[in-house]
Length: 457
Image (cartoon, rainbow, N blue to C red; front, side):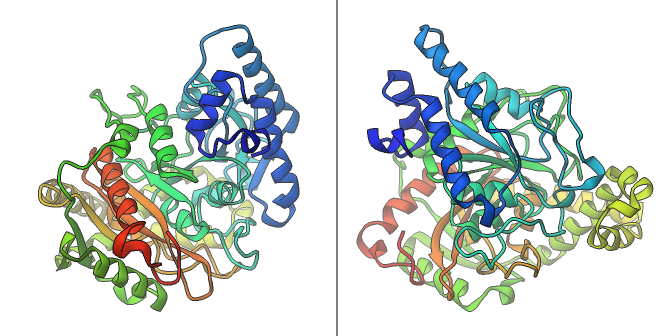
């Protein structure tokens, strides 16, 4: 990346080290990102708000802090993209809708506060689908402009894939981090529910809304999550207890070879032929390290359970948008809200009880297994104009608040990326990263030297 490439660092942690040592300036790193954006943004459309001079001013101020020998942050001088549902003081937050055109928050959200404390440069706001929901945004897939990057964190995934930024922040209420990470061929991580504070983030479902992030390297994803995590009294999903150390987990050796589990899920008939073939090959390569089991019958119910909770809560969270701004919302949103309005309180409470039972079940399940191996998406990205893709591969894990990591390990029949997803136990995010490291090392050596469905690891 410009001066970064000239001096050798190819990960965020290496760039931070170079900035701390003075061999790399943040201004040069940010300028390189802006140059990349200038080269490809007209075709990709990843950014909702971008102020080049503001970004460079932030970088210069951080370089000056280093020159004066002041304390340096863990992300000192690193540019980051922020999904446009996260409140930022220096940029508008419009949530992908004309309803919020020009909205200028008077305070940063919690994760942006964490980023600033760590010395990051808030490069700009990335495109989101309308209200972080289903209506397709204008962003294109960097691998092929005729395809979607997925949603709702469309711009964040595309910006990292295009090399505009090394890191970006997103959110997931169903599959809005893991699916676009899969389609764009980057690492996507959704931590356990409660690891990251949602204060100052546009809310659609208090039960299901969770935050996530995108990176080009798995250790950078782990590192960023460690920087952002923490308790927040204004978000009742967060908790007063130590967080898992994800980077330490990723860098650690496994005490014993991990046990993976493949579940024959009730929606497997939705997998594309190339996705199913790639996953089958991964299972074969893992051999005795992976067990295959049928899905419990209740798993079919969990898909419906998520739909009920999401619809019931979104209908209430977005009351003002649907009642007072009906002429400024999409047909997609109006149609969904019409259906959501038919969900009864009894249905909702029953779904919430089912969710709690599933969470308890998974707490026991992960005593025996290190990770579930499953596709990140049902296949390659859909063509642009045909929606943001099927989120079903993420639904159950999001419902239960489990940590999920998308690894860009497969390529589909048309040459676009498809991710393999690892799902871990609740608040065992560090164990999940340790398991992912083992899997990546395994697939890069021995039997795993062969590509998974025509992809290199």
